View 1: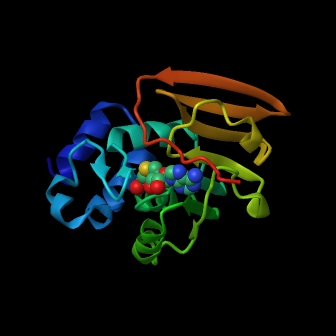
View 2: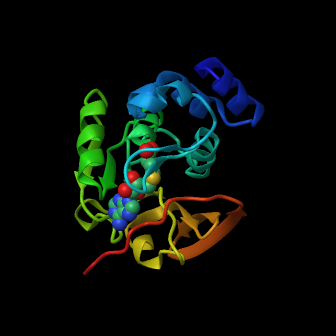
Length: 199
Ligand code: SAH
């Protein structure tokens, strides 16, 4: 597929206009490894470095939809990998966006690729405990899967904030409404597992 065809697939899946517009504006090619560039606009996940993948576009679109972005949120992405999702987020929201990536090489490459996205900052570290120094966030997106719901990260979420996270093979949307935590489950997704903190 080329970019146009991928955009058609996303449109058919009824993702909202602002999300499709972000996919239109960001070149996935820039975030894909050399020999895989020809698959850039296939609706599939692609390998990055040891154990990391750039997620499938329609899965990314689904997660972005669940974030219910209005356009000025500050956001944390844990497992920012190639930086592709950060680039998409920066097209949708004007707020500050932080990405945490545990693989040094990916963090460095993504910083380079995201130079033009002025509201995005990539940090190379273990993100399993979030980013306390910049919390609370309007939105938190975890791009690698964990075994159980991350209640510790809910404390880094603002009131009316939303956290989207793959747990096992489901994506969860977690909302913090006046300290009441509600969750919705969407089964049927596979993600790279989040590495556990060694501390
Ligand atoms: N959203 C990314 C890809 C996600 S793949 C993109 O657009 O390319 C999941 C990423 O999570 C991988 O890059 C992996 O290295 C990273 N990761 C795994 N465990 C982590 C941890 N504890 N802290 C930060 N990043 C982690």
